[in-house]
Image 1: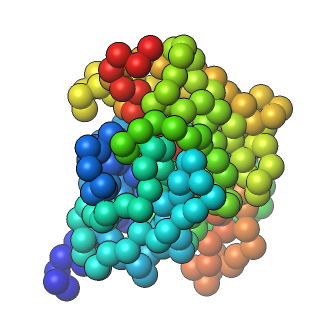
Image 2 (image 1 turned 60 degrees about the vertical axis):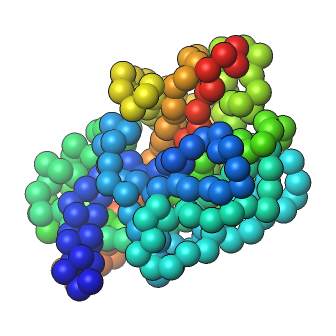
Image 3 (image 1 turned 180 degrees about the horizontal axis):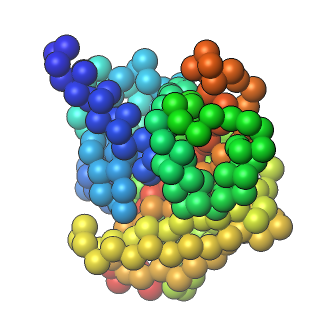
Length: 268
């Protein structure tokens, strides 16, 4: 077990700069048993993380039709991390907030690549002007993930869960009448304007597509969807925090929001 945990945290640290999401084994389960993985990786492909209550602040399921929710419970080491029966039906929202974690940038190039990819290239100059070191400096980060599933019906809608940073879909992906879907991005419950959003999609775990959008002044985006595709909607905010790099304290913090859903075949 000790070796397993060592390898787990080693791998997790190595792939920090990649996306984090909730991936149900079925988006339309045929019974009341839910299974879903927590994954971290790149290009909608990544390793499954185990259930570990020491790693998260919040792990819950919210009904899309009622004002009710319940905790996701498990035993440390469970894979998939969600493996339980549900009290709800129709649209359900699984949501998860991690605790803060740290990454050590041994080379400035990795930081530059990261902030460029996530739409924060101006932080490179800000880092230099602040006199921060160009190697061996720390960033803290926290992840906020959601996933929409439909069980024994499709009624309901996405809604705010109380996460600090989250997407809220304006249409139910399991009950669509067009090939357009939209979402609003919220930070501290307020619309997040002019924010880069990356949308990964795939069909049958292949045919990967990656698209980039920017929210408007109301935090709004809309995009075209296709039947049978699974979607991962992702965004990252990066900002400076007070810390002493000589004491190995983080000087940057990033927060990550993601939502996953499936557009069923023959829904449009």
